[in-house]
Image 1 (cartoon, rainbow over the protein chains, first blue to last red):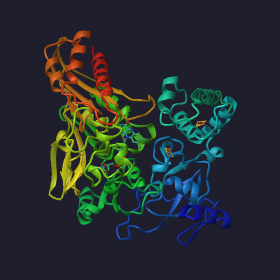
Image 2 (spheres, rainbow over the protein chains, first blue to last red):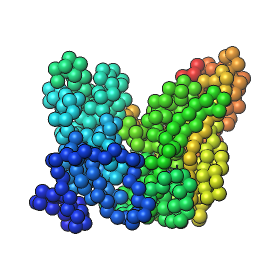
Image 3 (cartoon, helix red, strand yellow):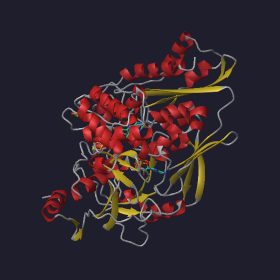
Image 4 (tube, chains in turn purple, cyan):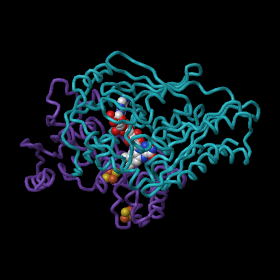
Length: 208
Length: 337
Ligand SMILES: Cc1cc2nc3c(=O)[nH]c(=O)nc-3n(C[C@H](O)[C@H](O)[C@H](O)COP(=O)(O)OP(=O)(O)OC[C@H]3O[C@@H](n4cnc5c(N)ncnc54)[C@H](O)[C@@H]3O)c2cc1C
Ligand code: FES
Ligand code: FES
């Protein structure tokens, strides 16, 4: 059993997320985040390989979790915290399937060091109840039948959400440009574009 | 060949000044490497590329090097950790340096532009599949270029090479070459300014390692400086890629032309994705001076741009990219006509 599988298994069975013997709760009781002093936690006199306990703000909730420097945000979200909506199709920044929003800006979570996310607001596909734009995109996705096999769709939904947050009424070219980092192996791009246009329309009409 | 999909264990070092970054690099010798955005470094580390995977990472993303300053007399200054997305959306760059604006907008994917940085796009390793998959090539401790022998369609030079034939992959560096940019490099002895062509010579042997850039292990790029655009100049960019959404250049062209009326008085034409460094097309540049842009002068310039091309005939061969290069030049010049 490798490290990740072990962690996943232990997280499911015990309801807590642990790493290297440190048990940390993935709590529902949000604690207020300290404002970040810098993006990267200082390690000046610490062991540079050491596990750090960090607090992540994901979908408006705070999670405490132990991470090594080499842990990517994607591993932490999926494997340690069990939020498996965020996918990891390529793990190399090549597909966009792992897209999450960090302070509303889309990032590939497979290639984003987890420790850097401290003090930032992370939004994943599970965050529909805290984010009205994400919610509208998901509704429109169902209405417009935007998903096919859906291997890429969590990432598409997040990239679309980022677009509509910064540009509520995008043109077709703007949609294609903003979505160009998200590859759909089924080639269902027409459905994806239709979903975004519908979400934009619903949000403008206030009917989301 | 190790590829277990996880980033191997590394020690994280977080400097609070550039001086501290340099001293950490010095202290850890060749064992430490800079991480800026991390989009390239983490990829090579996941693939376990032996000569590119450090034991310690000096994360410079928190340093105050995220800035773009434009001044009509001084020109443009871009801090090393400025996201590519900021370069792509900066209004002054769009107005005064269209070639850089356009090139930055074709770098990778939106998500990667949000994370990848100005210096990272310049210093990134080649995306040759052999290197990326940890083959023991010249850049990875061996003494062969697998690209020459094997599949050289996408990532190998059409202008020859010495040891390594892998192309420089960055888009913005091509624009920087065309704009005669220089870079500030900080090392233990202070800061040196050098033309970007000196930073990216195509092939450099540093500490016994074959590399594409000339940086010592304890040097870092802190700033990219672009001189003010010449009066009456125009610039453009065209990138040919296998897929429209996002992909590396099969060929690209960055052009800066200065006009006297409709006559070209100075030409800067640099090709990307086709040589071990951005490739200055000198024959085309001298041809263009004194001409005006017409379909026939553009065609002639495109032919001259690939003068000296020596596409590979071993392995798969890559002569098709000679034609794509001519196409990129034709398109970039046509945008200015
Ligand atoms: C799927 C994919 C597609 C891509 N497509 C394109 C494309 O079409 N066009 C293109 O141009 N690029 C492309 N890229 C490359 C991408 O642009 C680079 O990965 C990115 O620009 C690197 O920036 P970074 O800040 O993330 O660099 P990092 O990964 O942090 O660093 C890259 C390298 O530069 C060194 N480095 C970084 N900053 C400094 C510094 N200040 N001084 C000295 N050394 C430094 C690091 O040590 C490392 O070796 C693509 C990448 C991926 C993953
Ligand atoms: S899994 Fe992150 S981009 Fe494909
Ligand atoms: S829906 Fe199948 S990959 Fe996009």
